Image (tube, rainbow, N blue to C red; front, side, top):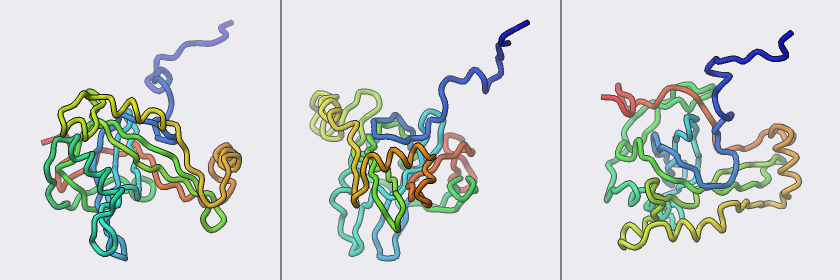
Length: 225
């Protein structure tokens, strides 16, 4: 009698599980589409639809580049500027209408995105942030910094022509940082995560994952002519 028969099926030999980003760290990602949205108050935010090792997902609400009055948002604009410098761009064209699989159950949704920043390989540092809202634990993935994928260079090192990687090394002391706000404790968050993020009702999770097809700009898809 055989105890176990080996399978060579693709799904049974695939290494690892989901590559959905769920913790603080530095992640090699491909930015598939930076999605531009304008709030009711008038502020402009860039959300990132990314691919992390085959797992497509969107990081919401991090890069607020302008405030309600149209003035630059100091933090968000600075981090977005890092991404532009690392991508080798001095400016990007206005957003264009695209379709992305970011609706409910990965349905295609029409949004506006920055085509000049599509398909960029980059390192992205994420810091998890937890809080309380309406009696439920909230979870947010905050983009803290970008680095060039080829040599870990920061935007500052690229502009100044200094040794690449020193800024990345300095940033590593913060790589596992997690922020807790609104009185939420690490123990409460750990229990909430262990419950499948269901224990406190609506999670407020600001990101989602999808394995849908690549996003389309008009009639074409990224990476295809």
